[in-house]
Length: 246
Image 1 (cartoon, rainbow, N blue to C red):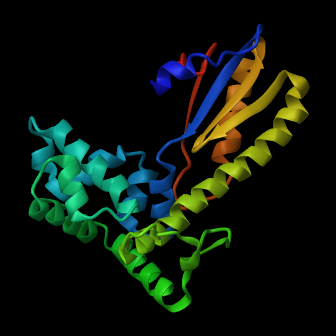
Image 2 (cartoon, one colour):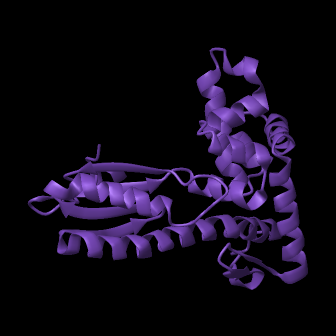
Image 3 (cartoon, helix red, strand yellow):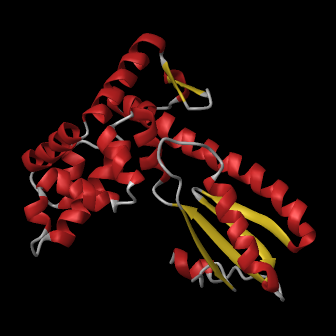
């Protein structure tokens, strides 16, 4: 339904839309913050991070078999779940496996990426000692900021563990918007403009004759927004409507 709604948003006559989306930015921020060598190297080498994680957890031999796509899907769920402090119960439900098996996958993940485990352990210690966590830019989120809504203390902790990653990713795209706005104004004047930001995506409108040049600038400025220990990668598409990008 969301994709259909996006098709209702079209560029004005004589213009096109540009959608630029950070690729796996939260996992890249995690690699940067944790300092985990294996996770960083996977991004530096331009690997498919979900396939790389699947190989780490399930082994090279398993990934050469007929269950490759299923194991990659498992790894993708684990990768993104780790950022949000996923439990074995939740992972088991999402993957349709036993809780014991889910816990084994989580343990295997942290065994393969030990500095990610150490990073989250350090954050938990900071939460206990200081009552807050910080983003890369120094913004703080306090325990008292979180409305648990009757949920257990684990919910508060998981929210705080995620905050430096999610918050830093949000800050990076804000930096990108500042850089991009200045450059678009300088190079294209009224012929290109930022329309909106949605999570890790920027949508820009540009005159049709300039769309390739503007798309290149958008990609360059988003990639240069902040220097991480791993590359920032941007997926760029263009089209007449927001839902019809290629």
